[in-house]
Image 1 (cartoon, one colour):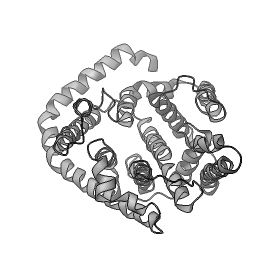
Image 2: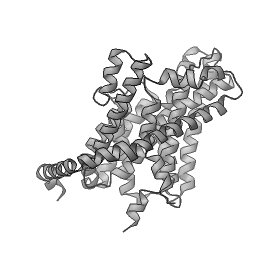
Image 3: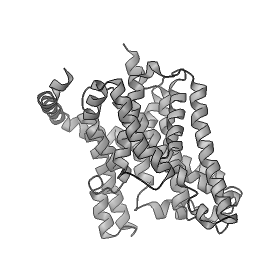
Length: 367
């Protein structure tokens, strides 16, 4: 059925991927822009605090989208993982060189930059790499586990890694990678049993946006309590925005399902723009360029008390996305295309050997 191919190019989901990157940029704008407010109850202080929320939600949406598509695959895409590694290596070398030229990187930071994936220079990239490598095995679980077992697994992990940590200071040794695995499994479950889910995009969006409103409301309330009741409340104003908060999870799932149940739309331009998402993240969030991007180029601190703060944030995010996106499209159509053409025969052999390995060691479990 040709629809399976088209579905991956549904621009509703691709636009959501782009939006997730935009709100991640907003998050970094708020973190690295040098904003400091003595009074946390001013409008601009709340704007920066709300923009800060984007990082967790944006990353969770990005992972959920990946799980939605990748969980249906029956093979490991060697080409894609090699492209990921080469992309990270390419930008790591460029950024390490720029960091040394601009004197923004120490020797230790340079080494971490060059060994980006194993040294977790970008925690998200390393965790995403691990998730991608584990995806064939996670997919075997998704295909073979019964619905009842699947629900039990998701409830157990959801309670220990999400519900309990939302209300008390317990994490059950959860890490970024383990949380991404949970999101992947949850997305895989919802994709597998999509026909059984409620078909009401408006209600899904209501759940997602309602949860987002509760997160924002909690921040406002806790900030006011921090000023008028006890400072400890203000110190925990961001508590419900953690990546594994139950409210963040409801926001991600509600918004995603509300979008995915909309009438599909297709074109070839939006997916190509969305394909630059990872590069946009790498190029704007790194130790080499952070001091240059935010305070020198965009002069974020000068807008701390400005009435145009939110407008400046939007314009900055658009410029960052467009410029870094164009850089990556150039890379895709030149260096990546040339390199992949050269190593394609080697990749084909690697795919055959990997398939033989899977068939030998875990193939029987799926029969």
